[in-house]
Length: 319
Image 1: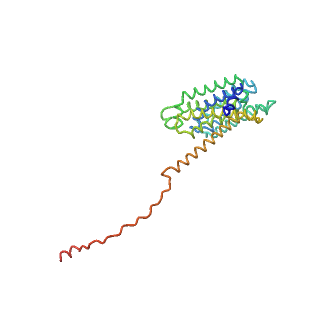
Image 2: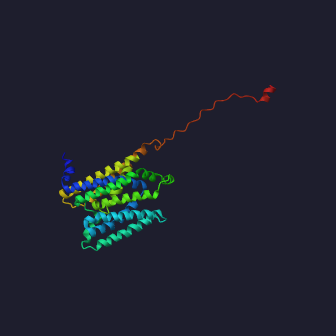
Image 3: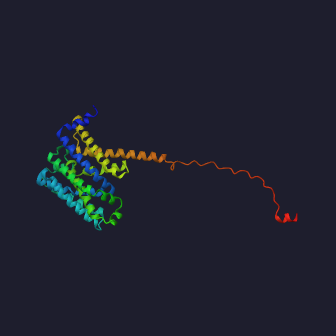
């Protein structure tokens, strides 16, 4: 009980409970959307959307304070998702399109924030989050955005999986690739919006990407990827919050809660990766096909026994 009490007692405080609730909702949606991102190889697109949402967050924060943050982020996220999807569909390289969109929009956000008086403080809040100061109203907004993203993915989950594994077959079957790509990019953008207020714009990518990558290391079964990713994200969020709280109370260290959660997720990924590499190495050593084959000693041919001499046919006739 002494071991479990530090893991539970911290959440007796209301602000810790709100932080855990927000991260729990994010863990569920990031676990589902993050697996699809991993299957489709869209990590760089997710990074682009993360940066492209920043000007909307900045505009909403500058004009409406914390109450306008979600509205500005939502508008920027939807605009960036649609724009990025349409550009990638053209002949332009996807990497070039992402770089153009997110560098331009991120620069706009920096310019907007720099016009405020408390430039450093506001920029730090937007980039690295303020998990422990999330208000009850922001909790409701975060949960609502996460539910919208889950509904979008829930209605198209089978098609998204089909698209991830067989793009040519998906198009040949008559599905609309543009519509499905747009749904997934909008869902990614919504996750970014929901997580930006809590863990910050620069750290949201880890919450979106790491759980899905861990699930791919743990299992090869498709439908187990989603619950494993969600559970790993929730466990990492819980331990990260506890670690940051205990470091602040016991050791007097002022640690960023969002950054602590991300570091716990990354550390968990490193542990799972090492275990997977170790297991794969042991399997290769135990495989009979890969064991070194011992060369058998050369076999000595049996001695030839003398055969009775048979005279040729003409000699038999003469005789």
